[in-house]
Picture (spheres, rainbow, N blue to C red):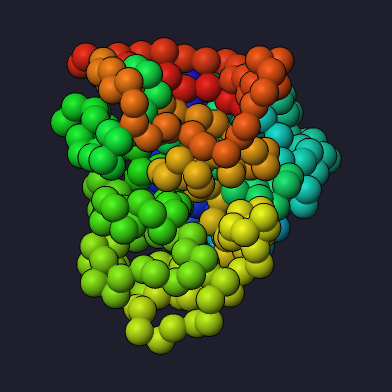
Length: 344
């Protein structure tokens, strides 16, 4: 199962809105074939492993990180492939959170005489497909808020200078982190001040989401470079503009800002399962205030500004007991910088 988990990771950043899945076929104590889901629309992990094994799959054991599918989607159902291959036993890491599944495949396999055991690597596999699980159960994207700040919680000087607070090594890792997301979301102030490209590394057609209440996004902003209009979403309360090569979407306001809950629901309807919020401080604060953030990632440089622009604005916490607390916190190092990650 550990090997199946490693294989599943090969699909990181490539399979959404599907989950990452890995499979290992074992016979007489030896691995005879391996598989993983390489991209959305591509073969499922178990189908790949069975195809590689051919006739040798008969009587083998299958180790699978996630319950096999039983419905026709972009690919045929894998339950029938397992049964037809004559596989003897199936070890499944976790049930599929999809309400259409969630244990139904196990019943079919057992009815067909296949031995099934479920429940392995719970912690690892839960984290592996946390975005897919939320998308399936809540019809909302999994949201990560990313902040690059100083030790005293500043993202820019009093004059607005912010490039660069963290090190080159940290910025490289930050760009690589984007690859695991379907979309990157920022507010208009970040676009106007930093003029970011919002590209992933290595390159992929990541969606770029802009919250722009008054539609001030410059038509020559860097975010448009090398990106197709269908991959840029600008949410605004202003009248639509045809001058921008993007999807300009009318969105409702909440307390004078674009309603972020509405935006995330809209994105989920476009099969966007996970979103990375990169700024600015008001956008991050708004997302936290409304309970929309699932995970927080903070890159902290060993610098102190004293006065400057705060990393998060708008929470207005008056008592320590009302502070937003993180759990399952992990702390690491990237050169001299500090990386802190935790869940809401």
